[in-house]
Length: 76
Image (cartoon, rainbow, N blue to C red; front, side, top):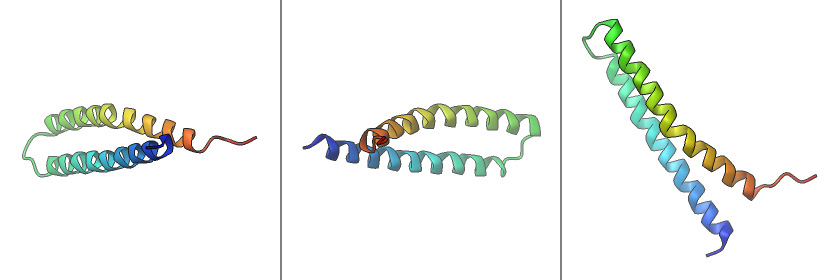
């Protein structure tokens, strides 16, 4: 398998994983609105979810961007 094809497969996987993670986090945030907890507790959970989301998604986005740059180098 060529490097180009491997990179394309990786990009597709990154995209799929990112979409799945976004869905998981959206579902979790939506569920927060249904909880009968005080504002502080919901805010604490929301803050933790945001931190978790950032930690889970950012590395994948960075790797996907590296692959995109490798596939489409800037021509001068």
